[in-house]
Image (cartoon, rainbow, N blue to C red):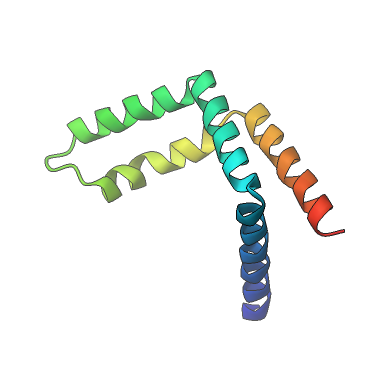
Amino acid sequence: MSSSKDADQGLYKEVHRRLVQSGEWDRIVTLLSQKLNENGWVDDMRIRGKEAARNMDSPKFQKLLEQIEPHAQSSVPLAIRQEIMVIIKQFLEKEFQ
């Protein structure tokens, strides 16, 4: 099982390397940020982060991240997820023919 995990990790690193080298990574991150901002997701996370920080005696970034990360990941709109996944899939098909 460990070798399968290592193989997955190696494949992930190779895909990430190719995305970065081609400039596609920056394009995807920019598009994702734009879509999330347009959808109000960024504002929602900012508000949630501020509220969580207010409820802590001594706010720490790591604790804030741990508190809002599950919601942040699950609240990305499906349409945006699908759009980004299509872009990644197209890149992979082109790179790994």
